[in-house]
Image 1 (cartoon, rainbow, N blue to C red):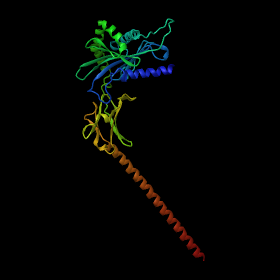
Image 2 (tube, helix red, strand yellow; image 1 turned 90 degrees about the vertical axis):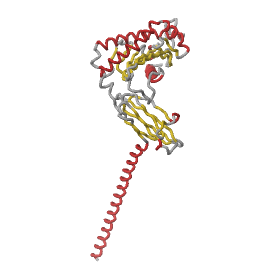
Image 3 (tube, rainbow, N blue to C red; image 1 turned 180 degrees about the vertical axis):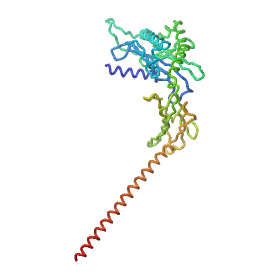
Image 4 (cartoon, helix red, strand yellow; image 1 turned 135 degrees about the vertical axis):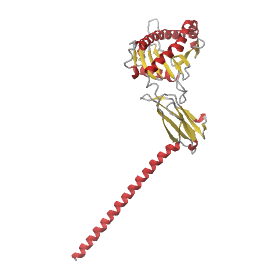
Length: 365
């Protein structure tokens, strides 16, 4: 595996940890009331010559990247415009940099423990690394509108769920059989468990609040979505797609109603909430139906940026198509009329020339 393949794998690991494998993301197209979250993604590989880092950390506030750190530089770098020029502020940046260095060390120790307990030795007798393995960690907290908090701390090993910390009970949940040994080993260390809970329940929400204060005006903005409905007709089924575009924050609810009632879940497909390049998001939801029943369906959208729920139907999209068709028809009629007028003018000119020639011949005679 070369450097290019390594970079590809790194992108896959990020996607797995952020969007799926470690399962801390809100369900697509259905979000709760406005809340804020602080999340750190740690990732690394046991073999450094694959284009993968030994350790890399990315920090997100409400899915907006604000800090990065890597094992080689051992420096925290601000990644958000609202932090540029403020990163030198000791109350925030100095503790953040120090904690990321601590995470770097802890990640290496945990990685070795997990590999040993999975019976995957990382070094041969000759000191040469065997096959490479990857570790991903997602940890952080969410603060809801009612000021209640929720913490999460999950490990993914080789792209699969591995361990999850439970702050309420101070124990670990094994997601696969090979994680049992590490679970038992870590549960013996009660001091570490209490430190983990203290971070999730106290330190993380406090840090999130400081970051939200720095990002006032950007992190708390509300950009309502624009909504459109498109149609795809197949041989035996019609698909209506409702798209919500360019909205912020990402928590949004998009659903299809049939005769003002929720559409059958088996006919509905939810897309992922995806980021745009400008800091906003987009999402789509489709519904399948027999041809000719489009008028029975309505797309219903709620979002913090909307004063009231927004609805959209295929008919509203169809009306714009009808206007386009009418304009095109008028243009075609105008062209035909113009051609007819030109044809009559040419015929009159030819008739006039013929009459003139007859007159001249008669005069010569």
